[in-house]
Length: 266
Image (tube, rainbow, N blue to C red; front, side):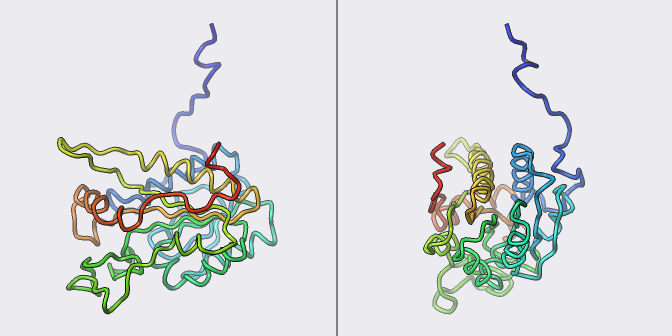
C-alpha cells in the first residue's frame, strides 16, 4: 500500500510566491482572494523566478508588497503598454497586471484595447467592483444604474452617463485576444436558509491558471473578476455579497468569451 506522503506533497506555511506581509485590502474585499489565487497558480507553474508584475494604480497598487515576484510600477492606466514593452524585450518572462475597472476601462481603456487587438502575449486580471475604490468612491465605467457614489449622489442616471461598460464583451469583440473570461468572485448567497458558497473562488483559480498558460502559448489573456467594495458601497460585508449577486451578476454574467487554444476543454 502506498503511503499518503508518497502520493501528495504537503505544503505548510505561506507559499514561496507570497511575501507573507499582511495586505491593506479592506475586510471582505476580493483583491485578497485574487492575490492568493495568483500566487497559487505561479507556484503550481513553477514560474516565480521568471514572472514580472506590472503594478497598476488603484487598490492593487501595492500588490508587489504581497506577491514575491519582480515588479514594475506603471503610470495610471498604462500597465498594458509597459507589459507589452517588457514582453517584447524578454519574451521568456511571464508578465501580468492586476487592474481595477476605473484604471483599465476608463483612463487606460485604449491601452487595454490596443494591446488586446495586437494580441500581445500578456495576462491582464481586471477587478470589477463597479466603483473607484481607492480614490474616493466615484462612479466608474462599470457602475450600475441607480448606484449611489460620491459623484452620483442620487444614483447613476443612464440618460446622463450612458450604460455601464462591459469590458469582457468589448475585449472579446476584437480579433487579437486568445482567452477572455469573466468570473463572479464573491461568495454567493443561497436561498433560505441562507448560506454562502465559494464556487467563484474555485472557478477563479482555474481562470488564473488558464490565463497564464495562454500567455505561455503566445496569446493575450484577459480575465475579469466581478467583485465587491463594501466600504464605498456603504454596505456591510455580507450585504455587499448579496448586492453583488442580485445586481452585478446579472449585469456582468460570468462566462467564457474566447478560448482560442482550448485550455478550458482540458
